[in-house]
Amino acid sequence: MKQFSHIGIPSSVMREGETYMEDAKLYVTDFAVSDNQIEWLRFEEGSPMPEALQTIAHIAFKVVDLEQALAGREILIEPFEPKEGLKVAFILAEGAPIELMQEVGA
Image (cartoon, rainbow, N blue to C red; front, top):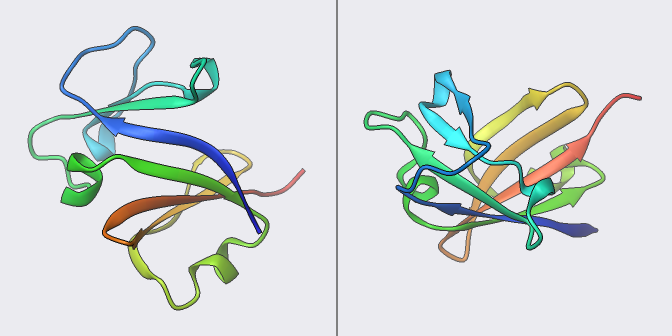
């Protein structure tokens, strides 16, 4: 079972409250402070992130079991922990990037 979390939209516009992710060469906003659950993504030139993520909006879902949700899927970005207590991976489905998120630990 999956539950909608947010939508991520690539943009070239600098936005208030961006956080910089150096390894990804990416500026990102916090969807939790958006009235519409929007996460804005602004990539620097030379970002190692997949082109699909840099050019197509993604939808993010919370899942109970990330490994199970990834089974048989085309993985864009292998599971990683962007912050403590959260495990994330990206797949490609129906031509669009999809973010899958699992809360871990307690």
